[in-house]
Amino acid sequence: MTRTAHEILGGGSVADVILWRQKNVTLGMLLATLSSWVVFERSGYTLLSLISSVLLLLLTILFIWAKSAAILNRPPPPLPVLHLSEEMVKEVNGLIRNRVNDLLSVFEDIALGKDTNLYFKVLCISSLLSKSYGLILHFISACALFSFSHPCIYEIYEDCVDKHINIAFRKLRHLYAKFDVECVGRVRNWILEKQKLS
Image (cartoon, rainbow, N blue to C red):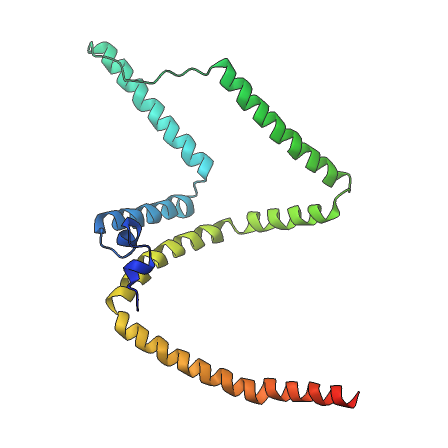
């Protein structure tokens, strides 16, 4: 029994989005991916600078709203209660303190040469991350475009794609059988002869 592409992808709303059955949602996700790529890659923004700019814009809008409301005798903008309880601060403080102490302990072990393997792991990972930030962003964007285009194209041309995949699979199986007979069989026979001689 063959399953459809919709069933393979789970059959729910995620499959509908990936197969372009909910065109507005799929198009919105593609536009969000493209805009994030443009923001981070082309404009030179980093995540921290983007968050700072958005918060500054929000604060400016609220400030202008509050000042204009005072002038026009209107209610000020509705804001939630911005207050942290002492218990919440103590809980977060304890959590942060424990994590920072663990990190400092690991840093001390590396700095004093107690854990050479960990030093080389940290060195490699930090080098890769520092060099490959742009590559990671390109890879995520490419994966998003791939995941939204290929299942839809497969569903439209399913019969043709399956026919060509079956042909390629038969050719690969034939090549493997030929390789198995010519190369692996010879090596197997050579090993068996060497074992008989010794």
